Amino acid sequence: MSQVPFDPAAIRQLAAILTETGLTEIEIAEKDSRIRVVRALTPAPVALAPAALAAAPTPIAAPAMSAPTSEPAATDPGAIPSPMVGVVYLSPEPGTAPFVTVGQTVAAGQTLLLIEAMKTFNQIKAPRAGTVTRILVSSGAPVEYGEPLLILE
Image (cartoon, rainbow, N blue to C red; front, top):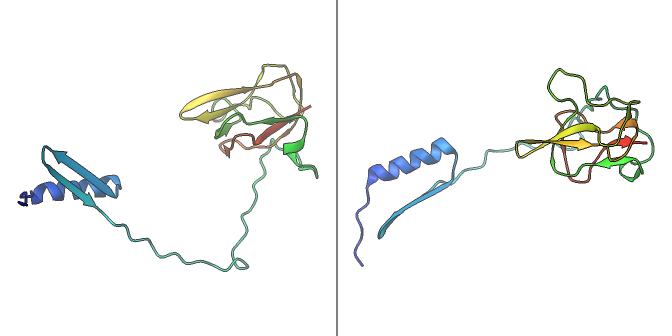
């Protein structure tokens, strides 16, 4: 088996591409030759604090949210679930009034909030008329499929 001569400059260029892009592996192939460059990342040392010493995250209350009740919001019959995974926005643009507020009466089909998924803003509309009694999410927060967004009674 004969060895194919390799081009050190090509290998350096591939290594530079790995560094620039943060990739860990790159391969090029031309006819019968192939060059593959793999970069092994060494994990950064992580210092773990004991659970008792770790500070608990400070909850930040959104002004539009009402006080929590003893019943879970997910089982509330008026809960409006998220139809998708994404990021919630309570107003159409930063610095503008929210679509809805606690205590507001809404009509069926009225926009309640936006969920941005894959760079597309999706309007979440009221499935029925009612009054917004609780807003369970804050603007800019990620949401999961089925997560309760607000309570509409």
